[in-house]
Each structure stands twice: as C-alpha cells, then as structure tokens.
Amino acid sequence: MNAFSVEAFAKVNRDLHVLGKRPDGYHELDTIFQTIDLTDEIRFLEREDGELVLTIAGASQPVSEENLILRAARNLRERVGSRVGASIHLSKRIPIGGGLGGGSSNAAAALLGLRALWNLPATDADLHALAAAIGSDVPFFLVGGRARGAGRGEILRPLADGPEEWLVLVFPPFSLSTAVVYVALSAPPLTDSPGPSNLRSSDSGGGPDRNDLESAAESLQGGLRRFRLALSDLGATSARLSGSGSTVFGVFGDEESARRAFEGLAGLREETKATMMIVKTVSRAAFARRAMPPTTGQRG
Ligand code: C5P
Image (cartoon, rainbow, N blue to C red; front, side, top):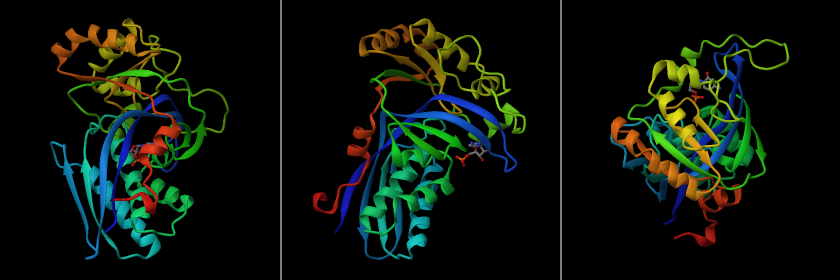
C-alpha cells in the first residue's frame, strides 16, 4: 500500500501592496511571498474503500483547515474522475488565523501528495487551477521559495532566493480573519490610472518593505503595533505584519541578532502572553526537497 509524508510550509509576505478593490470583491495585490522553516506534517495512505478520511493532531479547535484539505482532495478526484480513497493525517504546528498561510499550504500539499499517491495524470497547470479555486494563497505553496504574487495573489512569478535570513515570529494570543481585515481596509476601487497605490501605507518605519493591511489590522487589534515597534527597536531590518495577521515578524541578517532580539522580548512575552519563535527562510530547492512527495521508488 502506498504511503508517505510531506512537510507543508508556512510563509510570510515580505511586501504586500493592495492596488485596489476589484469588481469581484477581491483585492488586486502585488506581494512577495517567502517560505519559512515552520511546517505542518501531512501523511498520506492509500485506501481501497474509496473513502477520504482526515485526522488532525495539534489543533486545539475544529479548524477550517480540514475543509481545505478535503476540498482539495475532492476537487482533484473530480478533475480526473478517480474514485480512489486516502487516509490523511495532519500534524498541525502552524498557527491558525495567523497570516502564515497554514491552511492554504495544507491544501497545496494535499494536491501534490494525492496526485503522487494516486499516480494521477494531472499536470502542474491542472494543480495550479485547482489551487487557485481553493484560495488566493494556495498556488504559492506549489512553488515555494520566494515568489511575487499578482492578481488575488495567485498569479505567480518565482524569484531568485535572497540571502538566508532569520525571522523572529510573534504570535499574539488572538487571530484575525482575512475577510474582516479587508473590510476594515475600505480600499478604493481599482482604477486604470497607473502609479502607486492610493492607500495609506504602513507608517512609522518598520523597514523598506510594507504591508498595506497593517493599519487595517492594527485598527482592529491595537496591540499589534507594539510588537512591530519592539522588533524595530531590537534591530530588525524590517518588522511587519504577515498577510492579514495576526503574526508579526522581524527580519535579521544572522542567527545571533535574532537570538538577541528574542531575549530582548522576554518582558513583552511575559506581559502579553504572545508566543514567539525564531525561524529561517527556506530556499526553493530546500522547499522542493521537503514539500514534494517522493517518487514511486522512494516510498515506504
Ligand atoms: O482567497 P481566499 O479565500 O483565501 O480569501 C479569503 C478572503 O480574503 C476573501 O473572501 C476576501 O474577502 C479576502 N481577499 C481579498 N483579496 C485578496 C485575497 C483575499 O479581498 N486578494
């Protein structure tokens, strides 16, 4: 019986410009995705009874993530007209509602994993189309590394890996809904006029990158700003919200500076009950090694 595991990576948005609201209600983006070394693990096992069974460890509440994996599985089966089943076990480590793309990553891993498990003839273009239909961030997790996202985020251009960076991640003790943050943004409609976004971009420094969702997220959760400023004060070259939050991250050029900042945050950790961790960026080659299913001969 076919069985194997893959890692499903988290991402941060190193840069996120909202260009305006589209007639379909989504927002036109120009963003840079970067995979980071924080992963869920997903195990796939073929089932002959045709059932799709998902079990989850490590999530404290019933999660929408399970719907994304099952939706990916059902959509993929439908696309190729297959009736094979699978047991899928998800070990969850990526926080939910954190702007780190965990649910989207799980869905992409399910598409890649099940295509391999079932030996399906689906092409990469088929998987991309299925991924984009599941969610705006899902296609990025078929590519990994660093990539520029346009449209809703689903039109991707892979970028060369930058130098390895160390990130301090701050998970506040609350999550944020992407849809709610976009409503709070009240973005003006897209216009044909070229030029920079007319939205208020992130204020008070925070580095060369920006995230146009930061002020909307901070208007909903005022505590976020404090984490961003603390990371800047502790030497982060960039301190931003990831996606629509609630995770805030600081970027450091080496492990030592990241560790010093982490130690400098001890008081804030204690006071706010935020969880924090240090992670490295992940190159496209490392992503491919760890996220892609093994080829038939390597499975066990
Ligand atoms: O695509 P996805 O289902 O992940 O998006 C969740 C919600 O976030 C959408 O329903 C929409 O409200 C908002 N969104 C948006 N523009 C984007 C991506 C997401 O308005 N580019």
